[in-house]
Image (cartoon, rainbow, N blue to C red):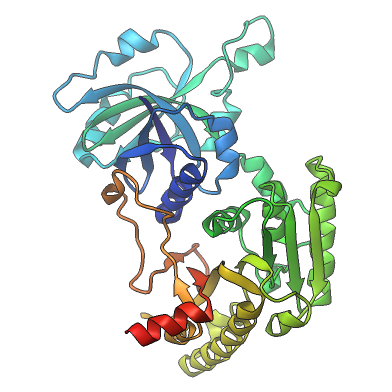
Length: 421
């Protein structure tokens, strides 16, 4: 059996879900061995390709292979002398479900090793890449060769044992930065979804690459660009603002040129439309999935009074209910909606959109975040709210994102369900 580790992003629940669903979609048979807020370790009979897999995920910071496992009663301390020798390596130490006391002990015992490390116990993906720790051994005859030839040693302290592995791929931080800050058009005032989150939401939709996906609040086109890079061929984007339509088109033109993609391979339609009138522009029952971040409220939310927040919530509830009514018309039966709701904070209180019961009556069913059950699922400890949502928060934000997955059920299913109950 092969064992692989995945270093997780800042929202560990979304990261785990993203990884698991992607592996399931690719037909990988696997079992979860260890899981924490930092790391996910799996075993599988299949050989994975970390360099390819990490580009399909919006969640994994690093992917590597476990090379040695020491069970709880085994001595791991001779690993460094026997396995490492004088090789150039970086070092990261992850909590994988074990006791923090063990992590502290290992951290102290490894301080004497000659290695690349940062102040904390985990090397960033930037350091791993820029220190040449993913390069194959090379001649020392040139300056470039001297920079290469290293590896990152990753130690994961789990509940079952201590895992030693090597990093094989890291997240392409330069590409994500370019897609976020280096594209020609940005509109921070209207809000922009991070590319990594956009990719995770697309993966949550679980649709085929030839199916039709729609973002009816496309803004500057972040979800559209991530759909394109993931290889989705049939894409629609709409927005009520002329500037958003223009920005999205500019950014996609830049994307095709920058990433050397063939426009002829894609069918992309970007147009102006109020999301509350989508059915006037889109054929009924034609869309396989909607992935979107709608308007999340005033950009001055942090300065609003309690009464103003309540009024803002009411306006947004009206907007969301109207657009879900239009989604119903254009979605196919069993079509998915992966969507963000805003969460406002006022002092110690949180205010959310209270429309879930209405959406249920309209024929929307909340979908589970995992595509199906997997071995070891109980280890994940996903932070899913009692509303069956996941909260995505970034420091400094006045409004958090609440992520939902809905499925469109046909009127026949709703009628039968109501009459049976």
